[in-house]
Amino acid sequence: MPMRRRVLLVVALLVVGGCAGLPQKEPLQVTVAGIEPLQGEGLELRMLVRLRVQNPNDAPFEFDGVSVTLEVQGKTFATGVAGESGVVPRFGETVVSVPVTVSVLRMVRQVMGVLDGKPVDTIRYDMSGKLSGTGFSVARFRAQGEFELPKSAQAAAPAQ
Image (cartoon, rainbow, N blue to C red; front, side):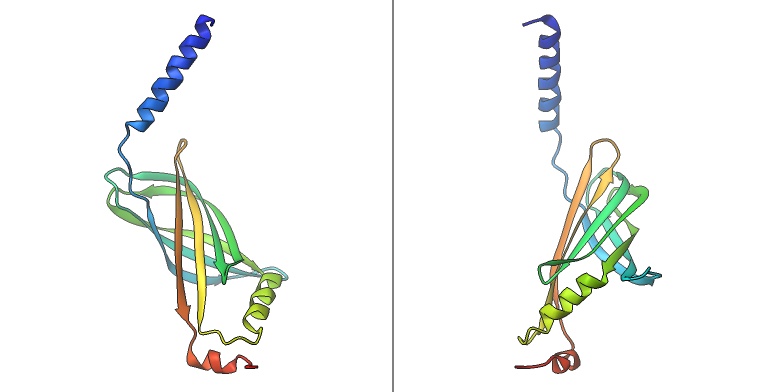
């Protein structure tokens, strides 16, 4: 084996071993802090989603970009990206704004799924995304849950 390959192999092993020795970090906690309507174009609905990002770690997390996907009832409903950059302080929080887009076709598909004749009491959602950190770091996040429909919305859905 040539000397150059040996040196590269040793360096690669040191880097991998060094990464394994780093302390485990807690994942960032991300929740929806607010939603505001934006001006859409044509057959789309636009919203500004404000995400509250909490850092439970002893080191700040610098980010340069964010992406979000929102699924409703197991189907993609809205997506968005933002080139926003900033820092989530150690043991702190910040709010990140992401414009998201919902196409009319996705909205129609969701409505048709709700109006399939079966009563709907709750809506399931799954939000996932990532904050692209500086260097090679990426913080992925996921929030899941469900919310109950108001009784008036349940009564408006046709029963079969």
